[in-house]
Length: 270
Image 1 (cartoon, one colour):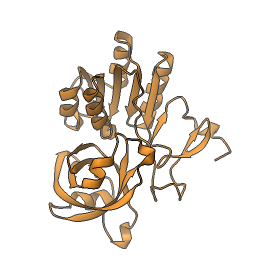
Image 2 (cartoon, one colour):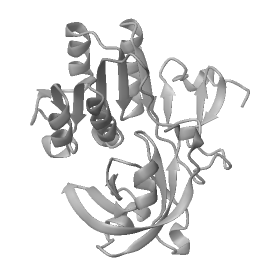
Image 3 (cartoon, one colour):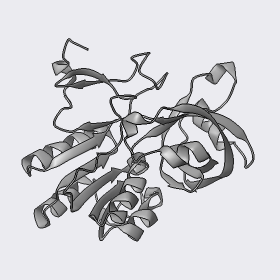
């Protein structure tokens, strides 16, 4: 289905489960039949966590996985909105707008893909890994996090990928150091058609550069503050070679070659 043809809508979603899967990280399963049937890998939902006037803005969350009439979201408890989300219990209802955004593209002829996940950047890559595997596309994953317990999508990746390389800051799983270490090794040992990356922006910038040097297409998913989610407020602009674009509608997934990573080179036109 063409994601551009899908019209987002408000859907009342119900909490099925809400579990702590790592320190400061939650996994919420939502009954959301409309969104579950339409969302594509890399898209997100904009959730009204509360009607409290102190936290009235919606919060964007990547869709981690889907199953029948349910969607999963991974979230890190960082502020008022996510703290209130962590307090939700099964049966609680919220409303969510979705599916939103431009997700990952799987181009015809793709046979071998490298996924690079840094921290909670694993959230939108899990469903992509599953869809690639369903199409018979070989998947390799470089998965990094501060510590082993924060490799929150490890089990999903190991179920569908032919090769998973781990890196942790403290060395508690895989090699000690940044995820770019396994990325360099994978790019040296194998030939990929495309690289998909999500995580801290400095990491994505390095991965995009590595893919460029290897002459491999690279798609990156960028995180920005999204107040409206529909392109009206201009709070989530991304500098690209084609001008300033909005992460909520033109992204969050962009061609790594198009992103201008150096803020001093921001183009004047929108």
